[in-house]
Image 1 (cartoon, rainbow, N blue to C red):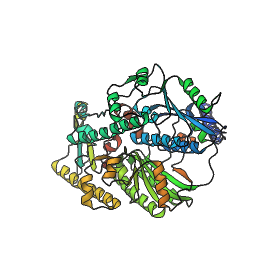
Image 2: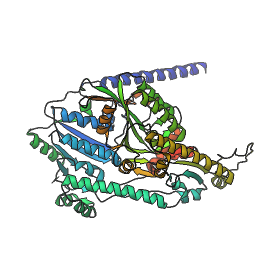
Image 3: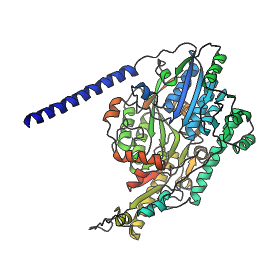
Image 4: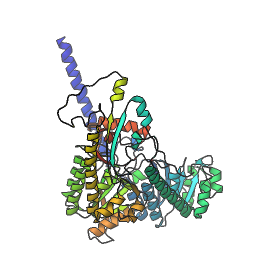
Length: 574
């Protein structure tokens, strides 16, 4: 028996040592592979294939070719690719292949405008579409020529919003959601307490649909050289078979990928296309020199805690994000900051902590705020530093309000035969119990606290926007605004994307307009060690799986029964 135990221990140690050696070997290979130089041939065509998400943060570099090919490019990488390709004499044109994009309407505007800017170089850009939806087509309209397969379908048919409500489901299983909110538009908890849209929700969602649909019509009309009324009429006939899309003037040619390649060959007068992928191109030699501007990305739901901002693409924790801000503050090579926000908000206290630290950084380095698809509620809160705020016309922002939610499980416990008995000391000791409903006194107390949080939120915005409280409060009420509306109401300063943010931070830092800048991403790219040794949050993992079924609801935040600055970010416009 003794020999068996010794052999078992030795075996376990050998297995552990072997795994450790394999991890270090993989890391060494990863470093070698990641740093391998890539040459760009003269006369190259950049093949830019965008698929799925285009995140704000740099995704992890996985040194396995089949997995690396599935790693998405970040917004900054796409922006940088277009900028470099336009000025690079070795790049003669772009073959653009968007497919299955899952991005918001603000990012769509960013990429569309990058294509328009690239075309000013005089280089051709040709699109090959596969199973395109309105998203891929929106981008394609900015290019020189659109190809679609002869047997494909252009799924262009207008837009819709779908909003799910779970009250009847919760009733069936014995769950009751208790929600208190400040602001008549603060409807983040309605999905659990209502069976349909409130008038306020319907008002906001209709405004979003009107803006997005109007922008889609205008973009297609400009790109395809048609009148807006003609595009509206066409939209009512969608979706389109490929041949109908061609006869309607929505695409230029029916053909396969090799025929799109042949089109580029003809335009470039080449017998064979010299291709280089977008990811490979980014590994080429970077231009040397330039002013270093930090691009600090706050992405995902804002939560409390000390999460590692490099371990999770969607991590936006109070303590972890503050560490990033201090890194930038203490880096003397950083001459300016772009704070890039893509967040629906979340924990109220964490949001306040982050705002405080962002203000401290703003006192040390020139800063501008750049909003992505979503910078609402807590995402807007952390943006009101007093620095210039730049949003896309289609950015979802505002939602200045506070919500409290808790779930009563008494009915569920009854169904499964579980009893709880409470012993209390203190009048409100059971205010956060999952077994008893809120009493009138408890609800009144929470309402008073939420109102205080709400007034503090509005005051922070008023201070940051340099406007009186009474001017901001009517714009608050938890209402979601689009960037174009927020600009009209004075909640943001300018409309634009990364280009405009770079111009603005140059002005803030008193740089010359001609100065070249290098955007330094924070957090940086994750290593294989971050992936292997990161501590996964079980609650976050559960939410990730539920989101695949239910959409992006604030499940984790609402379940923590805190005072939340979070918006109803289950909005899905398709």
